[in-house]
Length: 171
Image 1 (cartoon, rainbow, N blue to C red):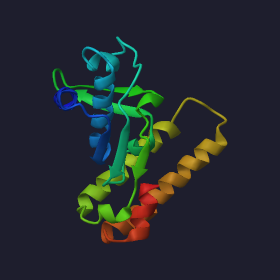
Image 2 (image 1 turned 45 degrees about the horizontal axis):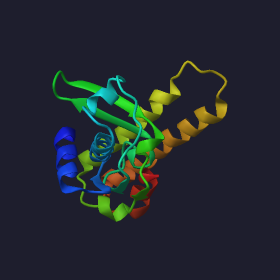
Image 3 (image 1 turned 180 degrees about the horizontal axis):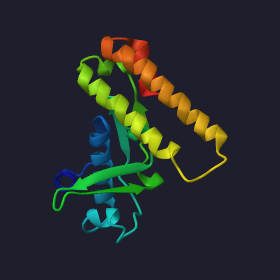
Image 4 (image 1 turned 120 degrees about the horizontal axis):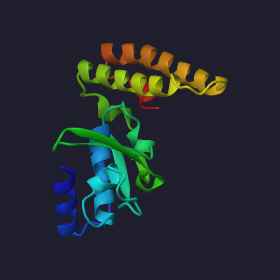
């Protein structure tokens, strides 16, 4: 879909990308942005054959709290030809703005909220269980994020219209 999106965006002459959704939508928008700024196959950036030198500006409207892509310089996509999943991290794709309105999540089913909470926890645990030692402050921040995800996740799952719970998860 990234290749299709980049082709459509080029043909339409767009000058800005607005991603409305969650992490996959936002990461696809970032990849499309790279594709617009980079001649050739955008997948070459993810295989680290080429280096990104630009990205179309991106804004986001978050509709599910999960991956944190709305504020990161990270972008992960999957190439369906071989089902390879690759990431690319540069500040070129960092969104220019993120609309994070908890009310936009009110229609999420509890299952999707739970999936988002698990995603947050997994991203946090990836960084928590690292070989770097003597990083007490970072470890304590991660532990706080995990406690917060569990506490507010339970509340959001039981009441998807709990503004504070959804707000805490978005942060």
